[in-house]
Length: 171
Ligand SMILES: [Fe+2]
Ligand SMILES: [Fe+2]
Image (cartoon, rainbow, N blue to C red; front, side, top):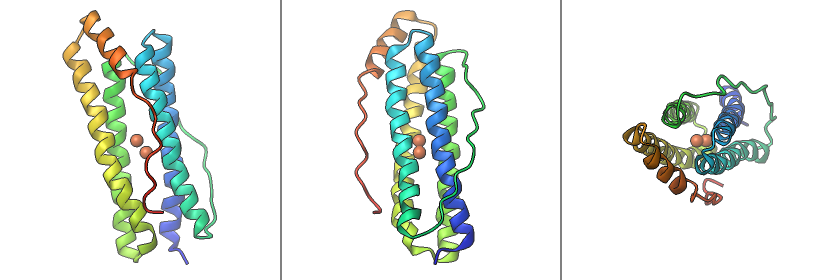
């Protein structure tokens, strides 16, 4: 049996991960619309990663025979003032997701939900990477400032990112 609060928070996390995917898809659209194809591709990989995250929570609940409830998704923003502005928001969003994961981990300890802990540990480590990668790009873009050729070089570099499904852990 899964603790009721834990059950509710794990369900809620599916929505947060899908909202992450939707936010990054909005950024992908904004980059595409503004001619930053490399950054759009970077975001595409990010969207795919967030869908994998949502699936992990979904499958976890399914495997435990717990009811899965989906909620409507919210999208607060669809336009940014610059590539740096978008990546700054992406980093802020990842910090929020980290706090959500930590809340889940704390709750798992509180209610003794040992079954979710390996998965949550995987997410704790994943979030370190998520924060690091978004903050690195935001920093690089900030440093490039308005220098068009520096921005174009970064765009090309960021376009090299390919999506590799994360190694399954906590399963
Ligand atoms: Fe995520
Ligand atoms: Fe993320």
